[in-house]
Structures are given as structure tokens and as C-alpha cells.
Length: 410
Ligand SMILES: Cc1cc2nc3c(=O)[nH]c(=O)nc-3n(C[C@H](O)[C@H](O)[C@H](O)COP(=O)(O)OP(=O)(O)OC[C@H]3O[C@@H](n4cnc5c(N)ncnc54)[C@H](O)[C@@H]3O)c2cc1C
Image 1 (cartoon, helix red, strand yellow):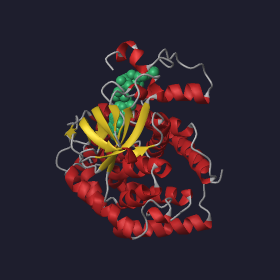
Image 2 (cartoon, protein in one colour; image 1 turned 45 degrees about the vertical axis):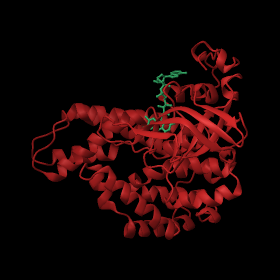
Image 3 (cartoon, protein in one colour; image 1 turned 120 degrees about the vertical axis):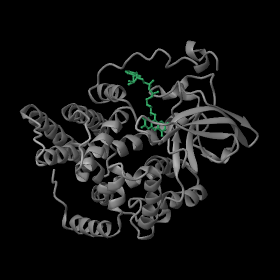
Image 4 (cartoon, rainbow, N blue to C red; image 1 turned 30 degrees about the vertical axis):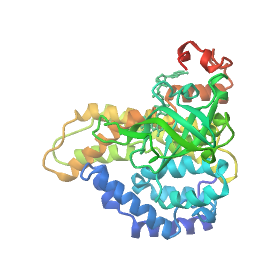
């Protein structure tokens, strides 16, 4: 495998780097990551950044031109993402729309719907969310209960979703529903896209442990949705959701920051601060171990990139990358917190900013091990689909959904 850019890629990288250096709001992202500005300021900055990229032709590079992209090669999109990483926090708002909902629309929406929504998703004018998880359906997504019942040319939706990231900012969302409870759980699901301002949609933000609010509960009461907003065939929603989930794991897995550079920088700055702080040899051992794992991740990710650049579908590397990166990030955060005792350094503003950064990695790390498939689910996937181990027992696989003991109420 050749890790060097080709001359053409190097030229593209230089052009992208130069444009980002001239236009990206680095100070805003730094201030947010250091706890010095509010989430609402970052959201405003994120909207401006998306529009600026779109107008200059840097948004969603690998999408067709007709939808706001520039038909670029996958490698160019990857190079762009690498160069944009220092301000990656500006993409959180649009990640679900651009990375998960848009690929689903490209496969399943009609031409008019694609022409209407995709350019607006690319420019950040439309924010989209993904309503899959429910209070009793997370890892076992196919166990969801939100009902979709036909009514003339419409469907009526009733139920509840949870952990819906960015629903409080979203204009639209894709939603997986149960359209037929009398068949086995995977076979009675239908996917739609929904206007988040439709009557009967109520979004209730969830306050997180770090004080932030990124995800929500969404309650649906007699929400009317036109059949034209169905994505895929009736009762074939599971197949549609696989398109979304595959893109989700790839977007998460390819871009998880492990926190290693931030921790190295903080510990080095503390040691140089004259406070007498020393991390000690045991911590140095841990740093060496993390560096090895981080390099393993880098090269696993390179294999994924190489496969994509050759036009191949992402394989198990996506699950391995997310599993290892999530564990590594949390290990680093916990060990560093133990070492530093959680004490905020007095006086030096740059040390305090570094401390806030480490704190934000610590608070974020458990979520990475759950979102987009928990560690255990990823291990099941790797065990069954990569290593060919026997599948775990799935007693309700062939049972009608409404005949299962826990689902009898449906
Ligand atoms: C930051 C964040 C953002 C999210 N954003 C969204 C979003 O935008 N839209 C959305 O729809 N959802 C979202 N989610 C929800 C996420 O997809 C679910 O939390 C996840 O699928 C796990 O489901 P659960 O929380 O119901 O846990 P459960 O499925 O109840 O799992 C509980 C525990 O049991 C383990 N477990 C479950 N089944 C098995 C099994 N078969 N074998 C071994 N262990 C098992 C799990 O690994 C976990 O440790 C988000 C979650 C997070 C943390």
C-alpha cells in the first residue's frame, strides 16, 4: 500500500489546505473546545461554514454536481476531510444529514425529492436527523414500536423516538416505523422522511451530563405523512436502514479523534510549566501503548481508504475502527483524569484551556462506545461476519412481532 499522495492528490491537498487556512473559523472552534464559547455560537458558525464551503464548491465533494457536489473522486473527499479535521466540530450539525440521510435519499427518493433536498443538505440550509432508536429498541433496532398505519394516500404515525441527535435544529428526518406487526420483526418495517414541523411532532431536548444538549426525545401523535415521503417499499424498511447504518458506521469510524495529541500536549505543557508536575514512568508506558494502538488505527483506516479509492464497498474495517478508537479514547481520558486528579490549573489561561479540552474528551468518550452500534454489537458483527463464528441465538427471528412475549401489547 502506498501512503504517499499522487502528484494530483498532493496538488489537491495543497489547494484545500490553503482555502481552509484562509476561510475556516479556527478561533471559534478552539474557543468551543476549550469551553470558552457556547454551543449556540458554534451552531451559528457551523451554518456559516457550510454555506461558505457550498458557495466556493467545497461541500460534499464526492456528490454529483446536480446535487451540490463536484463529482470528485472518493480520495479527494478523504483528503478534504483530513485537512478540515482541525475544525471538524463545525460538521457535527450536518454529519447526519450529509453522511447518513443523503445517501439514503440518493438510493430511495424520487428525482424531484433529490433535486429539492440534496443541494439544501449540502449547503447546510436544511438540517436532517435520524429517528431510529426508541426506548425499547436500540441495539435491537428491529424491535421498534412506532406505528405507521395507512390512511388513503397518507400514513398516520404514532410512537416515540429517543437519542435523536440534532432533532431540535432539524428541518427533516428519516424515520423507521412498524407498518406490519403480524410478520417477523425485520419484515414489517417501513422508512419515511418526515417534516419535523408537521403537526403532532414534539421534540424534547435531553440535558447531558456535560451540560450540553445535542440529542432529544421525539414524540409522534397522529402525525400525517404523505405516501410520497416513503423511502423504499412498504415493509422493506430494514433493507433501507442498512444503507443508512453502513454509512453511519463509516462516518463515525473514519473520523474519531482519540484525544492522544491533546493529552500529550497538555501533559507536556504541565511538565514545562514550572509547577513541579511530572507524569512519571508508568504514564510514559501508557503513552507508548496508546501510540501503538493509535498507529494500528491509522493503518486500519488507511486500508479502508484504499478500498474506497478502488471503488470497493466498506468492509469490516469500519466496525474495527470504531470499536478500537472508542475504547482507546475512553482509556486515554480515564487514565489522564486519574493522573491529573481533575484539578483545574490556576493562573495560566493556556493550561486551563488545555484542561477543558481534556475534560471534553473525557465527557464525550462513553458516547462513542454506544452511538452507531455499541462495542458489544460491533464485536458480534466482527465475530460473525469477519471471523465466521457461530451466530448468537436469535429466538424471535422467525416469530411474528406481535406474538413475541415482550411485544404482546402491539
Ligand atoms: C451520542 C449518541 C448519539 C445518538 N444519536 C442517535 C440518533 O441521532 N438517532 C438514533 O436513532 N439513535 C441515536 N443514538 C442511539 C444509539 O443508536 C443507541 O444508543 C444504541 O444503538 C444502543 O441502544 P440502547 O441505548 O437502546 O442500548 P441497548 O440496546 O439497550 O443496550 C444496552 C447494553 O446491552 C448491550 N447489548 C445489547 N444487545 C446485545 C447483544 N445482542 N449482545 C451483547 N450485548 C448486547 C449493549 O452493548 C449495551 O451495552 C445515539 C446514541 C448516542 C450515545
